[in-house]
Image 1: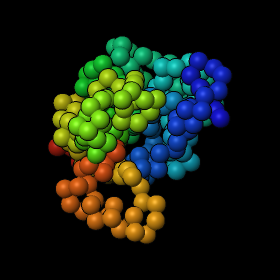
Image 2: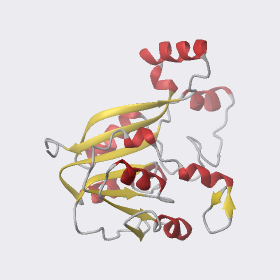
Image 3: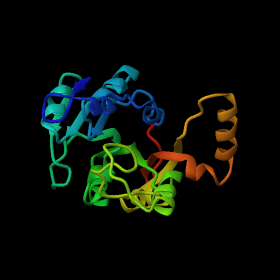
Length: 227
């Protein structure tokens, strides 16, 4: 159990303690400055520091998480991303938006504002749930319902939903060019035979419907990576 939003303990808060290896895999090695947008408790930022990142700055709205993250990161700013808040002035080599943009009223505007803080040749890493996952078709087409849950694709706090094409469009609207995409599959293999089936489906068109989440690395359109 870990502290949850607003104090106390919340079993769901454990989800915010995930150090997100699939996100970290797209972060260039040893960046000098990283901005972790929607940093929650700072678990991801702390893991990035352990991986060799220099300064990690977090942005977070919830006061309880801000207090925890400040013990882990170099600086944490309490901000409402839906408001037109000022950003730290010194540019960042990497900006991470891990499962945050889908919670915002205008993610295109927020991402475009964040990109202004990106250093030349810098990288933006974005992770977004995939609304084309098979469970969406099952819930809507078979069960005739759109569930509201505490986390996942049907998280009740989501305001926007994204396919991979939508994720590309989101980045393009912010002046970014996607340079790499990784897929988080669900269900994950639970045994040898299950693993073979998942891998077989994931090779063809079926991989879209097995993809629970897309993780994208992007740079400013036409810009070379930092050396």
